[in-house]
Image 1 (cartoon, helix red, strand yellow):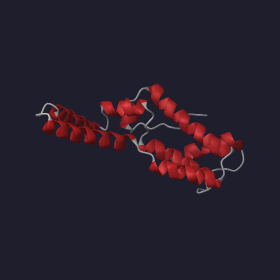
Image 2 (cartoon, one colour):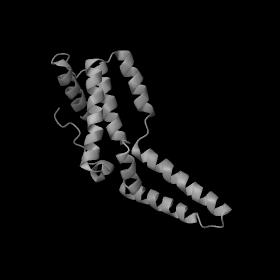
Image 3 (tube, rainbow, N blue to C red):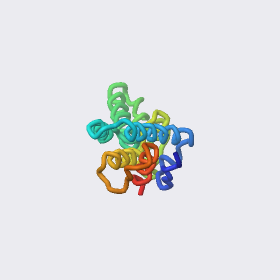
Length: 156
């Protein structure tokens, strides 16, 4: 399949190793191909509901740093302040992520397969296109051509 995910403005994706981005893209391609070949409208709708609940990397970083910050405050209160450095580190990570759109936690979550909101949305729109929600996807050309057209249409 030709390269369809040409996102240059995604900071998390730009900082992630190419192998990680490619692994995530291949997962999306496999899912869209499966839906193009074997998926019916009901299965596509169920899968879309699952995608709606999927956490993106920014949400995962925000929740993790917040939890670490609170944990540091709670443990620091109980143990005389030694754990407050954890709160400081969590705050610094969140600040870096907020200012640059990327932090070391982003890299960790990317390695674990957590996607950006744009990547999740691309898959959602491709599945919606296959389901027939849009008019731009041809019915001829076979599943591979339809899957590729759906991915290209989702990005535009």
